[in-house]
Image (cartoon, rainbow over all chains, first blue to last red; front, side, top):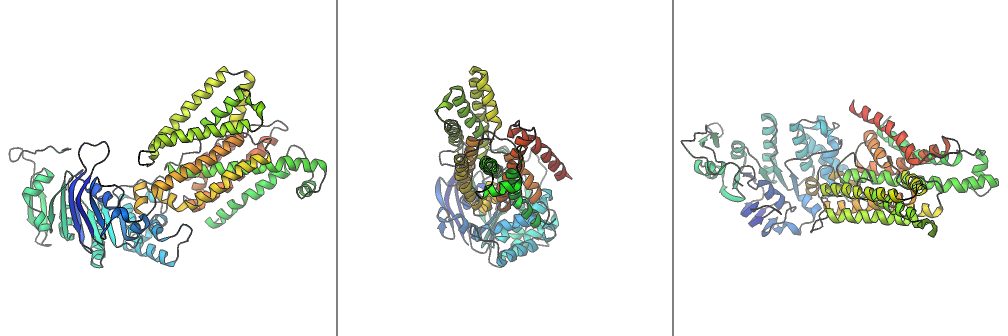
Length: 273
Length: 327
C-alpha cells in the first residue's frame, strides 16, 4: 500500500502559520518509513491528513493511488491500522474488548463476530505479547502495556499498512525492541509501516527510509545515512549533535553534546512557532 | 453468578415489576379478580383498577426505559460516566414550557396544552444547544455541546424562577409538583406518545451500539477504526434528546433514572453498548414501575412525587455500587 503526498498544505482554523507547508511524501509499498522531527513539526498532522480526518487546504494525499477523501471510512480501516499518540478511555473496558474493536470495519451493523474475527484478535494479542492481560480493565494497565494493547488492536484490523504515532514512547527497552522487531517482521511480510518517532537511533536501525520534518516542511528525505548529517540534524533540533556509525549495528547513531553557548548560538529558540 | 445469567435475570425484571405494578396498590383487590379483569371479565371494581393501573404501569415503563436509554447514550456521546439525560438543558426547556402554561392558566384549553408546551420547550433547548455546538462544516464538538447545554439549562432555570416569582401560590405548587414528575392519571394517549418516541429510538440507538463502543476510545481512534464519527454523534444526540423530551412532556422531570440505571449497569455488566443499551431500557422500565408503586403505596392513599422515590432509592443503591466498584 503506497502513500503519496503532493505539495500538501494544511492549516488549522485560528492558527497563524500552516501546520504542513508544501510537504511531499512517497512511501513505497512494503517499506518501513520513519517520520522524525521536533515537537510541533507537523508529524501528527501528516498522520491525520493521511487518515483523512484533516482535509488539506492545498495539494493531495493519495492512499493506494486514490485520494484519501475518496475512501470509505470502513474500507480505509480495513486497509490501514492507525494508532494515535494519546487516547483517554473514560469507561472500564477489558483488553480483549479493546482489541476486538479492531474488527469493527470487517463487521456489519448486526453481524456477530465469527471464527475469523476471533482468530484475528487472538493472533494480534499473541504478537504483541498481551495474551495474559485479556480480562484486565484497560484503565489499570501500565503505559507500556496499554501501548502494546493498542498496537494489537491495529493488528486485529488485519490491515495492509500500519500508521503509528510514537508507539514506543513509554516502553522499556525490551518492549520497545519487541515492538520494532514486530513492525519489521510485518514489513518483511509485505505490510507498509509509517512510524512517527523521536527515537533517532532506533529509526536509523529499523527504517528503510526517513523523512525529517521541521516547522511543517520536509527538510530531508532518504535512507538513514543520507538524512543523518550533523548540520541538518543540528539545524532541525537546535542542539549540538554528533553523528557516529555504531560498530555493532552498522547504522548511524546520534549523540547529543552538552550545550555550549560559545560554540553555536541556539537560534531560532526552541518554541519556534 | 455468571455474566450471562446476570444479564438474563436483569432482562426479565420488567415482567415481575409490571405484575407487581398491576396487582399491588392502596386498594386491595383479590389477584384472581384482577387477572380476570385483565382479560375482560372480573368485578366492576377490578376492571376500574386495571383501567387505571395498566396505562400507568406502561407509561412508567416507557418513560423509565427511555430515560435510562437516553442517559446511557449521553454518557457514551459525552464520554462522561456521570452524564444524564437532563445535562443538556432539555428538562429546563420543557419545564419552562410547562410552567408558562400553568402560570398563564392555559391548562383550561385541554389536557394536551401542558405536555405540548413542555415538548416545545424541550425542542427549543435541543435546537439552541445543537445550533451552538455544530460548527460551519456540521461537526459536533462534544465539549462545546456540554458547555452549551449547561448554560442553556441555566438560562431556562432563570426563566422558571422568574415565572414562579410572578405567579400565584397555587400555580407555584402545581409547577413544583410537575417538576418532580408523576405518572399518575396516565392516559392511553400518553402511553402512545411515549411508545412512539421510545421504541423507534431504542431500535436506532441499538444499531449504533458498536460505533458508540468505539467512541469511548476517543473520536480520533473511532474514526481510524472505521466509524463515521460525526453521523454517529449527530444521530445519538438527536434521538436521545427526543426520547428525553417525550418522557418529560408526558411525565415531568423525573430525576436519577437516567443517571443511576446506566451507571449501575456499567458496574454490573460492563460498558459494551450492545448489552448496556437494551438492559438500560429494560431495567430503567423496571426501576420506574417499582418507584411508581412505592409512590402510590408507601404513604397509604397520599401520593409521594415519583422523583422523590427515585432519588430516595436510587441514591443509596448508587452509593453502594460506587463503593463496591472501588474495592
